[in-house]
Image (cartoon, rainbow over all chains, first blue to last red):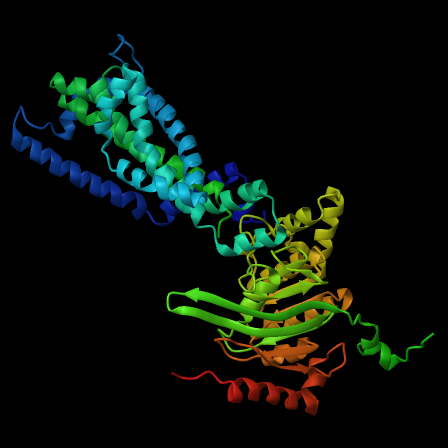
Length: 283
Length: 280
């Protein structure tokens, strides 16, 4: 079978190729898997020793965390009551909120980014305001959000939206401004109509920047939702942490943290690979 | 009826070339306002190009050759004077004055085929998809890249990319083909190959060509006339020399012609002695 160049592969083929190259690299050079495992083991050891020194009411060590949360780990999908559910449900609920908030931010952010990127006057007018707003910590938006929306659910989603929209706007506007002059000249000589210039030249050229913004934003969204849920309560991984903390179940807090970290990594990788396949043709 | 002897048919038949002025650069100057006062790039440029001619413009770096070409292409407007193509003033870029850039400017997310198709599609919107595809494939074939049609630019070498650009430029049958140091980024072997190919294609299609180069040998090999520019600022056309060699040009034969060295020395003298760049 001849190897087809990467840019001619379908996304599924490229995914399979990526997975098999990972597996191959592990076998070729085991240090990719072995080293992280060793370091992880060392960290767990340090943690265990530290917690032993703390005594019964201090930080639980990894062994205790696992034994305390065994039921939680093994039953991610249980449902006892409205708020007492398995970790799987908590994470799924949080992801749902992220999905809506991030989806809105991605759509609106890209549109706004393109508008201010292509229009100098709009850029000069809006950019300073955006630069100020984007430094506001997510939780600082919560009071306003709750005031305006009243209920917990929409205010949490708004929080995600307002946190994650800024990198998308800013990166998109930069990407749009950075279309190389050569491509613009080609469009001018061929007298490309504006719509065709937009879809065939502007968007593909700005795509790497847009996806960078999207990738940054998905991380921020995930950060924001955990914080928001601690305050709004209900079902969600953030409220799970807060409830566990309030009932003194530190082991549950720790295990939730691990789950949060893993899901955050997966989200980041998903956006990364979508971006990579979408702009695989960029040189 | 005129009967053509063999030597007549081999040499360029100048008497049948249309002698109406095709591209006229009339008293053109280009001045940029700067904080330190107006900066004159070009001054009093007068040039007449006839249909089907191959003109090379040479001069030192920074002497304004690209500025002149950009004005012919329509990216800039002259400060004074006018540039007319077939008696119509040039005000903006257009496919009748197609440009081959030094940096290729092929869109990297499209294949070679798609890049050329984009041009053909926009210049010939009324043609059917089959006709447009045929035009694209014809021109890819002309530059010897028919099997590279589905490759993206990053899979092509520099020479191949430039060939695709030439194919793209020719596929829309421009009135005048503008080349801005098209082979500057290539190694000499590829450059000589592409020069031969360009001439071969030009022989068949006789599009008017305006080309910038800094390679004197290239200019002598390719062109009918060489326009030599003085240095900036306020650069002008210094001299225009005619290249006397008949077409089709044979590099080896020309190289042995004593007129080649006279011409070459004349150009070198102009560029390096009379209008050498000052070392400040």
